[in-house]
Image (cartoon, rainbow, N blue to C red; front, top):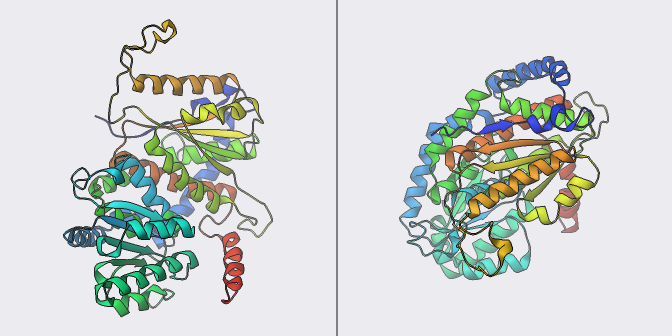
Length: 455
C-alpha cells in the first residue's frame, strides 16, 4: 500500500471557487521565482546549521539514546508518564499521542496498553488540574519528563518544584534519578546555560539535549517528542522514515512537485491576494484533531510578526483556527459558509480508519432511517466530509486538503514534517523571521516581575 500522504489544492483554485477567492495559475507562476529564491536561502541556512529542524530525523545516535533510556525506564514498570512543559514542549507529544495511541489509552489496563504508561501532559498551570494529577499519579508509580530549553519557563519550573517536593517527601531525594528525566539546552560553551543543568547535576538525572538551533515549536522530532514517544511504545523508526519520505518530496523549489511549498504558496496568496486572513485546520478524524493544536502554535508564532526582515512594520500572519469534522459542521460551518469569506479551510483527512463500525438494521419502525441501516459509520464520515467540501465549494470558500491513506506513525510524521517545511517557506514569502517570537517575551517578563522576580 502506498503510504505517501497526498496534497490536493484544487478546491482552493479559481476553477473551483472563482478568481476572486481562488488562486490562479498566473499567480502561482508569478510567485515561483520568489519561491525558488527562498528555497536557495533555506537550503543555505540548512547547510550552515542555522536551523536544525530539517535534519533531526537523521540523528541516529540521539534516537539510539532515546530508545535505550526508554527501555531502561520501562523496566521499572511505571504506571504514568507525566510531561511537564508548555507550548512547543508539549503540543507535539499531545499530537502524537492523540494520533497513535488508543483514544482511551489512559483508561485501558496496563495489558491493554501493552505495558506502556498512561500519558499526562501538563501544559498549563491550572492549580486544580495539576493537584488532581499529583493525586492520581503518585511519585512512586510515575516518571516525570520536564522539558524547557532554558529552564527559565516559569510555568514548567513551578510544576517541577511541586514534583521535586513530592518525591523528596515521599521517596527521598535519592529516588529522584528514577523518577525525573530532563530535556533542555545542550551543555556547550556556545549554549546559554539552563537552569535545569544544576537540577540534573544535584540529583544525577538522565538528561537529553534539544539542539541549540531548534526552536520549541519545531522540536517534535528531537528528544522533546521522541522520548515520550519511545516510552509510549510508538514506532520511532516509522516516524524517521516518514520524515525522510517527506524531506525527499520537498527537495526542490518547483511548486508542481514540492507539496510543502505548494501549500505555503496557496496559504500566502490566499491571504495577501484574496483576503483570507484566517487559516482553519478542519480534521476529519479525532486522532488528527490535536495536530491542529500543534499547527496553531507553529503557524501563529512563526508568522505573526510586527516587523519584516527589512525592519518595516508589516503586522503579518494568518490567524490559525482548529475545527473537527463532523462535530463542527454543527457549529462553525454555518459561519464558514455564510459569514465573511476570509478563511482558507485546510482539511486533514484519512482514507482508512483503523476500525470499521457497521450500523445495525435496527429502529425499523422509523422509515426515514433506512439509508443508515446496514451502512457503516466509516461511510457516513466520508459522506459528511464530501458534503462539507461540496457545500463550501458552492459558497466559493477555498479548501486545501491533506489526505492520509491511513493514520500511523509513518503518515503522521509526514504531516508534521510537511507543515514545518511549509511554515519555513511561508515565513520567507511573508519576509519575516520564522524562528523568533518577540511578542511572547514581554508578557513573560511582566508575569515574572508580578511574582517578585526580575522583569
